[in-house]
Amino acid sequence: MNLEKIGLLILFLTLGLTSCKKDDDEVTPPTPPRDRGEQQIRDKDSLIGYLESHYYNSDDFVSNPNPSISDLIITKLNDGEAVPDGKTLLKDAVGSSKKTTYAETEYEFYVLNLNQGGGDSPTFADDVFVTYEGFTLDDNVFDSAVTPVTFDLLSVISGWGKVFPEFNTAESFVVGDDGSVSFMNHGLGVMFLPSGLAYFSNAQRGIPAYSPLIFKFELLQMFQKDHDGDGIPTYLEGTTENTDDDTYTSSGYIYPLYDYLDTDDDGDGILTKDEIEITTVNKLTRQEVLDIKTSLAYNQVLLNKIKKEEDNSYTGTIITFTDTDGVKPFDYLDKNN
Image 1 (cartoon, rainbow, N blue to C red):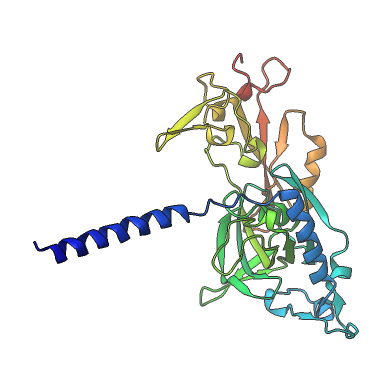
Image 2: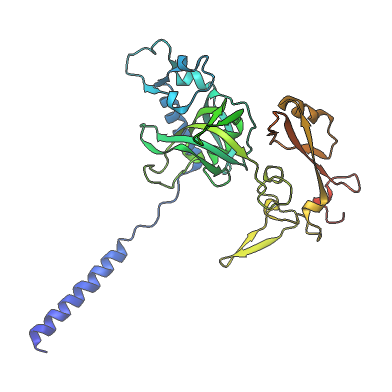
């Protein structure tokens, strides 16, 4: 190898090492997420600004027995323009904000209720069957579902778990000759969420970090979830209770086995499903089923899912929590009983 080639080799190596060192020096440490409380203040101002500068076609929902997302038109109010007749400013329509605590932060969000719905009301832990359209405050649509889809409310942004329980599913549905399904008197609304109840610092496709979001939605059906199949719906067990402090290992990490995932909640060797009793009651109307709440014993609960039968009657499910000693906790949470 001649000296010229050796010199070039040394030069290339030197440049390579210098370049690597320069890249290392320029590595930017990750930016920590913003303070949730401070971001909530910014988001609230942004949401109010949107609500005060947009109106919707309110008259189109008067005497509309079965409204849908396609009926809703939200329009930006031009400077100096008055809200047209037959329209309503969003800020006037939504009224006061709703409040909730999430991630140790108090959040405010807004809901436009266009139709309450006549069926069951889901809980924060159920599956919902919905159509929806999601967009940012600059009216950029980032996602939608015209054909109904099912979501587990424990697996989506927290705002959905706060809003959907305020609505009811469809009162009934009809299957057409072509297999299509028409839902009658379903929940219909719009939710206006701060980023802390959405994706917060996690940017998504079409959604910048710290973006307040808006969702139009139709709530069609709900499916009561019992994640561990122990006979007690998840909403009655919560998602943070771990009575017997059980754990499980996954991918080398240890996780708490919360009650809603544990088939033996108190760890006494007796399955939870064997420490409760499940019965049903059938009435002519949904309201008659709901009215039985007043006659239940202290250890009984009427589940929120009420089934409409083919004969148009309604069936409710009652859980009786066995209580051997007559003193709480109930047997399924008491390893001594």
